[in-house]
Length: 234
Image (tube, rainbow, N blue to C red; front, side):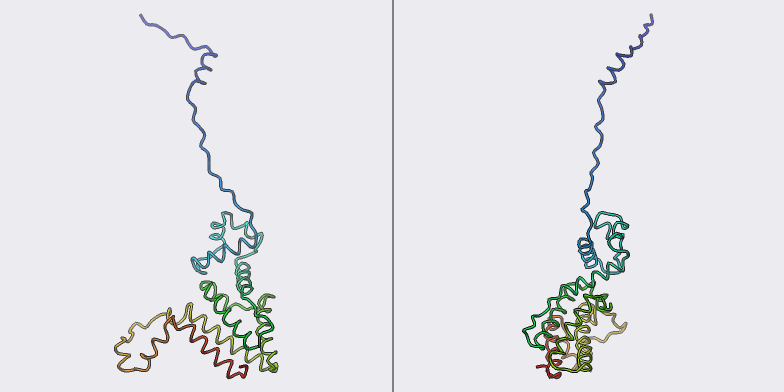
């Protein structure tokens, strides 16, 4: 004999549903982003450039690093160019200025060495900085500091300008060469062997050991000495 089940009453069915195990809702990990600021954006941008190079830098990558959308960055910097401008000023402003009690030649030495150290500290940004016009207030202030050294040494306006240019040739050339210059440049498809250079062009071979990175500072000092002595500043 077939037995028929009586349907559950509404109250019984409700109790049965309540008795079923419930799934615990997944808790989504939320990342609380720090409020954006110009200082934080500049620090992150500089770190990103030094890590991956200027060519790979973009506001999208910067947003990923900061945990925000690129559009959020535009509230502080209208474009990528504005960010790079700020970084140029940031590095220039980080170069310590010598005390005025020093002689003009001593101040120039301090500025040149501090300039070189700033380049070595930011090798991926520096090629952009070196070729960027320093015509912001921060940049002009740094240039004026150098020119005032020549003025305080008693040079004429023309002599100040020419000595300034020569010093820039020295420091810019040396720093660019150290971080991304000749040793890192492309090579010939048919380079001479060291043995062939030594045999045919011995003077070039002998000079080679003085072109090594451990000689860069000494050569920089030598060039600065020549410049200051021949300028009559020392």
